[in-house]
Image (tube, rainbow, N blue to C red; front, side):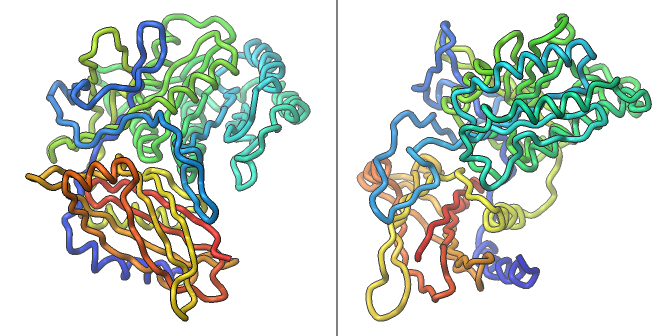
Length: 474
């Protein structure tokens, strides 16, 4: 996208955004609730969850249950950013050779060689090797066509074997412990940055037999554990939190001792993932996908004094007996000094510039030709109501969204987008109706012969949640 076009978009939305204060920075949690048999519990309410941050009680700001009802089929000329009504899910498998001893690498290679071709489907699953020099090798890398490739696991063995044979030597001595940490964390961050462009839930399954840690020399008196006292962990935590990516450490080969267990479990709890031991890769991917589908979504609004450049401990409990929660237990409280308006612009511009749609807000649109003599498209948009914060104020429910429409040609965006602010004010009867049928937003949009697609973007002014949907108009 050219710089002039980006500036025009910023100017187009600045007038609207300047009219509101915008939401504060929020902490976003995705707890998975399990019963005594390990099965998902999906009918909890916000009142069932209690949160403390550094032992201070917090109030839930937004709450969404897992979607358990399939959406109605799409009609002709109707499109959705959540096929089947479910949140999309993408998973990267990272086979980390740096953090494995020689014998374990060989055994793990042979086990994966057998198991990966037996995956039921490779759709939205990607596979990378972190070699002994610290380079990421994409065996089935992320890309425009890769997400829909279901059969790549059956075809990966030859390339996988070639990559592993090229890594049959010892780990470079000059790498050292700090080098191991930097290479491994950089690989996780690079994958998370790329995954952030994909809609929905995002997971990294990190195949490793341990986590190398190096104490931070600037904190000689640190009395916390390795997460709080080791080098580079804050940067990793902030990156993964910003990209909304969970890391699931996975050790299934070699001598896995209690210290390794603890380190891997703490990495999972830092990111909202889960640590796996001694399971087949097929079972791990199945469990990771089940957690993504059955996760709740909730946010809370810490005080302004919360953002103190330190790790914070979160404790989330469930009031219902017999329910166990799997959820992120700490985060790095990095201050964000930007005005709320600038944060809102960032979310909106990221959705505009992304090569793929985002599904933070569920959208469906049905299109038809505009009425009259003008060339254009009439859009009947339905916004998934649980994804929008509707506040009950007396006898009404209120909310506010921005609605952006961008023309797209063969080479990308065309001209300036249109931006509209919608203030929602619903009676109880209207609220009940939209909860069943969706929040309706209707608009006519003029087009030219150069316009091949439209992208619509909806941003919740109260939470900065964003959804986008790109669809053809010719």
